[in-house]
Amino acid sequence: MLNPEAPNSSHSRSAQLRALLESPELEFIMEAHNGISARIVEEAGFKGIWASGLAISAQFGVRDNNEASWTQVVEMLEFMADATRIPILLDGDTGYGNFNNMRRLVRKLEQRNVAGVCIEDKLFPKSNSFINGNHQPLADVDEFCGKIKAGKDSQTDPDFRIIARVEALIAGWDLSEALRRADAYHRAGADAILIHSRLPRPDEVLAFAREWAGRSPLVIVPTTYCSTPTAVFRKAKISLVIWANQMIRTAISSMSVIAREIRSSETLVNVEDRIAPIREVFRLQGAYELVAAEHRYANLGEQQAHAIVLAATRGQEFAALTDDRPKVMLPIGGQPLLARLVNELKNQGINDVTVVAGYKAEAIADIKGIEVVINHDHDSTGELASLACARPSFHDDMVILYGDLLFRSYILKDLIDCEGEIVTVVDSAKPGAAISGSPDYAHCSAPDDRSLFSQDVELLRVSKANNKKVGEPNGRWIGMVRTRKLGRQWLTDALDDLMHYPDFGRMGMPELLNHLVGQGKRIKVHYINGHWLDVNALDDIDRAGDFTHGKST
Image (cartoon, rainbow, N blue to C red; front, side, top):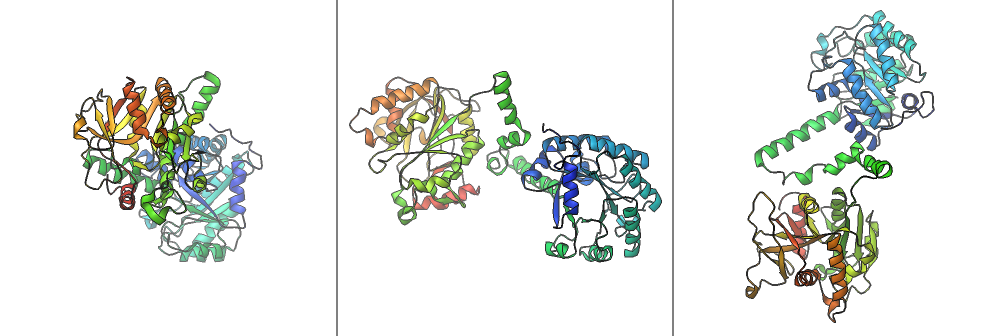
């Protein structure tokens, strides 16, 4: 939970909202309807939040007709205020009743660190302005001015803002009536005027702005005239633009698409990489702050996994494309391959990432959040020499993987959840004709039975060729392995042994796995069925682009 600011501080949220309204520049605030959407709005860079009555009603699943009580709205505002530090302006409908309701509302909003409220001159219970707005009666001007005065008299924070929303143009009245009402509300103490229109062009609000002539800050909500260039609003000396309902509409459209796709396909595989990872939900909730607090106060929390990424090779197969960069820096779908891999690791909670670079190592410098170690002999050595370079970064919980991998998120997530001292990932799908490079074939103690439950299968051997003398392989090792505690020690000891072999410099990860098996170490197999690829040749780049856009698996 964030600490509220002192009410009279120059940095208080009410002071921030006042500064937005009185700014000489055009300012913008964005709709939010709960704690997580409020935090997203803040992280997007907006200086303020519009707590939309329509959006809050919609997230409750009720109509924008005061069907959600004002206490339910205020309770939601408390969650939104706790999740953010920027000012919240409440869409307060008509003030939820008469002058006395308005007084109580202002007191409750100040208690919850809400910076201001906007009330509209319609009758309670209100209806949304865009549903038969021209048939909705307006409040008596004197009665509405009384609400404004009651609200201003009730506030204890001098920076708390009350904005009067004029609905005359919505209700079919002319410009003179809108101006008459706005002037009365201004004289009653309103800190700003919101002029509303349902026309698809901004003509009415621009005419109002000309006549209003800066008597007080002017606020608009360009929902219906959304194509109007922002420069028009600046020229008209508008103070504040409210983007009033885009967050809730985005949520509805996105959820509808994903829900229908999951219902149709009966699987999550096709959508998992297109939606926010669960880790992002935890981040927005502040879950990781709680983990840190548990470490500090309760000595709780699990140790996080580390990753070693082997990325020292040039990729000769790519010719001139790798003249100035290693293959892991080739752009795939507009993003370097290595950056995609690092992001995937971090999405699964693996924040400590060591990349073993070699060829054109300086090209990797732009990748954020990684430790880089150099295999200076990358031209003449293989994967095990690179792995040995990362030995100081070995960890009791560790994932080792090739830097040219693309895979669906669930593969890494499931590997992390697998029990076993050493677990390796094997693809049991029949390989297509377009396999590039030299596949690592995996021979296992049992084939993949595609069962619902995890099989107890061990790795027997990894071979570079589909050698009939050693039997049919059970799949391909994809270049991803996880070690835990004792498994880390097994791996370290095996690496020490192999370093004494004369051909160590040419050895790869398959030789390490085979050595461990030969020593009687149990390497558990986690089967998958497709949904990955490695980038080994020019043809793979197009396939990788399709893969990142969900066009192939």
